[in-house]
Amino acid sequence: MANYAKTDDEVMYHVGLSRKMLEGATYALVPGDPGRVEGLAKALDSNAKFLACHRDYTSWLATLSGKKVLVMSTGMGGPCVTFAVEELARIGVKTFIRIGTTGSLQDDLNIGDVVIDKAAVRLDGASKAYAPIEYPATADLDVTIALRDAAKELDVPFKIGVGVSTDSFWPGQERYDSFSGYVIKNLQGTMKDWQTLGCMNYEMEAATLFTLTSVFGLRAGSVCGVVAKRTDSEAVAPKEMYALGEKRFQQVAKRALEKLIAAD
Image (cartoon, rainbow, N blue to C red; front, side, top):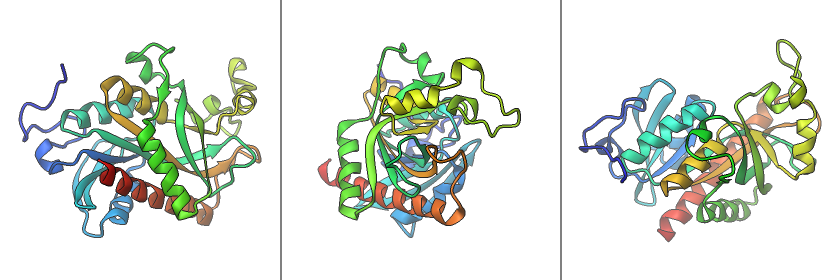
């Protein structure tokens, strides 16, 4: 039986929000970075308002197509995502769209393009507390289609595929530009493996988000802007190209939300 908040005024311990504060919002955009929240919220609604800031979780409330939409950061990595999904579900959120940046693994995915993950390889640790590793981390079909159709309408270059979610930005993604410059032997060569298997991108939250929402009977999708092309280098894109990826995922997320709200 679902464990919802006992009252509309009950404030969730980690995210600092209550059902009353959400004003009926059942949709949430969930970037990892708290610094992205205000911009995302105002891209949806110029009159969006600040709600709370507690730990990793900064939140704003916007109105889009007559519906309230929560924009809240999750922090980086799977463990932080579990707090967000657990507590937002308790206060009524049913649809989650992960927004963020990513590194591409395929030659035809360029910096500034958008990746829509339909599933994710579970290299995280947090999702294993909710389902055995054999359980797939898959996005919701309706959310994924809405994101795809939004990208098409906006003429934003995109790919749909399987992402790879890791708990480590450096050795977990076989990066050698870390402090030590060392990747343990069982991770050496893994980037080539994922490329050969057709995986689209590296990121750090989708597998946990997809697993939890599937287990809970909720829905989720993910749209990320490419800011590193791993087939070329380990470097993150310069500022202007980084901003392009960010602008595109904002546009795609907004249009997808409009489609979901209309369909619902």
